Amino acid sequence: MPADSGRTNLNPGPLSPQALYRGLYVRIASKLDVDPSYVSRVARGERQSKAIERALQNEIDQINKKLGRGHASHASTNKAAGKRLHFFVKHHRDRIQKEWLRQCEADHNLKKIKLSRQRRLFPVRPLIDEAYRVMKLSVRKMSNNTMKAATEHGCTRREQGYSSTELLEEYNLVRRCIFELAQDCNGQLDTHFLVHDLGQIGEALDLQMQSALRAFTEQA
Image 1 (cartoon, one colour):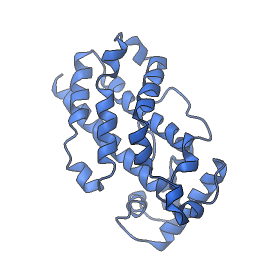
Image 2 (cartoon, rainbow, N blue to C red):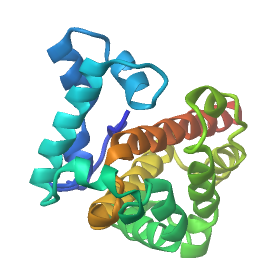
Image 3 (tube, rainbow, N blue to C red):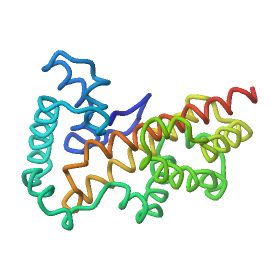
């Protein structure tokens, strides 16, 4: 589900996709009196419901207006004009990594951990690559996937003196940087699949956090 997990210290802004998509599934579930997890499955294409699909489309249209975009159906009728989110994550990994470092160094708690830039960044690029790779899988295949980069991230941060909260905050920063990328590329994104893709990257990062935290606590 496209939402933040845990604490964040920097406001992503009232008109960022991260802010506007937060709680989307819950809002629709409340309107239609269904479980948010069912809305999530419909958004991913795992279930079918015309009522939920219409509600999702209406919500996307409203969000697109707030972001200064056209009607979502325009993007879906011309797929060549809109690329999927994983395309931008793949081709802007350097940007995500650079912005992640900037936000990390601005974070009140993370900047207290004295590491060189190289040591701080070392486990992050593999995390982004892994998230990009698994976000294209189904949720079931994601959960069966070995999150090797995330596991190594947890082990590394434990050795470097991180707390569990600080470990998880690094994932919040990755999530935020990807949402900011989506905001900047909003005119080029295929909005027909945007809710699905934001949900997929959220699932991937959540599973990575779980793997990293298991590795982190097993070493304690």
